[in-house]
Image (cartoon, rainbow, N blue to C red; front, side, top):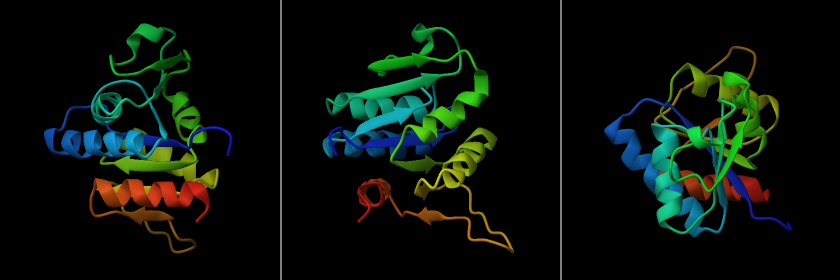
Length: 159
């Protein structure tokens, strides 16, 4: 692959101290693996993952819902202003070779659904547990940030 792997990290925009610790470690591990982190660019899990990646010297693409690049959290190195609101959730997961969901609410559920429709692998860390009578939800659970990033990188590489 001629470009670095891109790992999308999704989760709630609201602050949760426990999830922030996990998301920051996920971001750090993504950057240490040489992958680029993609997120929604705002607060909560997105800011924590961005902070972890930035502290490790990684690149962070923040796809923000507004038309203002300055709305991205301060750890985003490449803001992408969309002006399309929550519809940007599709761009966040479509830009990743794999997706890690950390916690999350309804927006995260939409990102998981988009990722699965696009055939992107989804690794879940304390996130939604879904089941359907007609199909497997396709969320691979992870026990901790190390396992989440390792699984995401493995699936992104097609291993």
